[in-house]
Image (cartoon, rainbow, N blue to C red; front, side, top):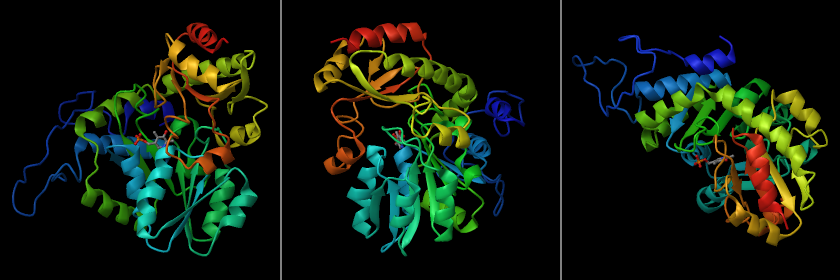
Length: 379
Ligand SMILES: *Cc1c(COP(=O)(O)O)cnc(C)c1O
């Protein structure tokens, strides 16, 4: 089955018992056993639930992974992944990274003796020079949040594997519709399912997808059932429903984003536009090589912090809100929202400042979006 069909149909698709073509919501915590040592395959929903299983199998297929676990948030998924590591391990991460990922590493997992180092993973020489004997994983976000830097997944996976380290890719920004890191050599993919996979700003969820690496799969199974941050049946169903329109949504978002990115450049108050679909983006060629699309995320800088701050209050159609990937266009102020708690030194290094705005482009009529942004960004 081709991707778009797979998105619409899901893994099993319909309910084999009733023929229902909307996969049922198995809103049950526990499952009856016919007799001792007999099970339908489902015992208790923290461990396995049929609706969640359909979501997990569908996303595993879309990412070309062998297993997937659906979590109650993207951060719960990242937390589970970090538990694969132990005292003395070193993890290399992209320096331009979702703020919550920096926080969970620095504020929580560093307490257990894991060391985290943030480097420019868009520069393969820097990655090469930063790997140590105890480096057990490289965690990459590409395109990165919010500066839209692109890392070469295939090249980094070669480096990682030469050192017996795992390559983990946060694929939230492009979704499996545009980028499949496992096919490029990554071992693990993480998603904030809250974003493009859900796509309607109404569910918080996370997904972890792993290649056929039995020891990693066994350990994640153990972590998942022991910790219990599993996604509920109703939210799993909402995501299954959302994924049916993934291609339609993300392709429309990309179409709008391409128009907006080049248009933003023409505004007198805009000084820089960061969008991987612009031909002058430093990684345009690499993007063409490793993805099948540019996605709908644009960051840009305006002339002054005053213009940025005032724009947020002047918006009429676009929402000033955190998050991304939904059908509604959102404008975010990274320095005060997604990246408020990231170390100042790190933000300065990557260029996140008080003139930077991040736009998650929705599926509205692009002319309405232009009109609203034009008035909001006017001096
Ligand atoms: C939102 C986000 C996360 C965290 O996911 P939640 O679902 O909010 O817990 C992780 N990575 C990226 C790139 C994100 O945008």
